[in-house]
Length: 148
Image (tube, rainbow, N blue to C red; front, top):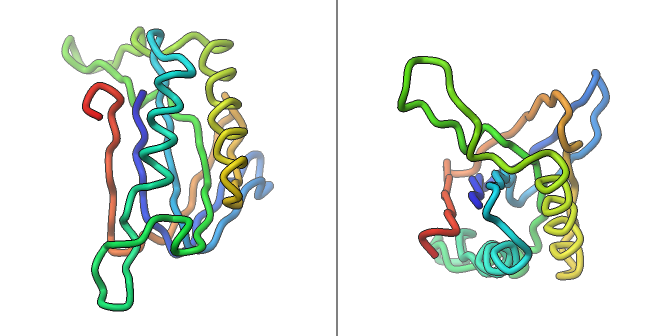
């Protein structure tokens, strides 16, 4: 599982010209899920995400978690995070989880994040989405379940 986390001043997701998710200060999280991922891996990733100290304290040091900063989450599924570009110029997505498996885990991640008390907004799984953001910093962190 991969999370590409962007600290944002604001972010939104648009589907078919309609804004379906919008946050102010917080994290835009692009979520990639593989065939090997499960709830145990998701729990580990969620714990790291929620406790990641990437927000600035009064001394301008990245020392606050999203909860400390009273931030919001925008969670967007993105199977292309597992693009394999080794052979040729057209990416292969065979490492990405199948639709139902990935959707179930994505919904699980959403529900578990909501349990933390953080405001959670989302994209629509499998939809063609337009993601808008104002990056803060910029700060972009990649969490890979194989590395944490």
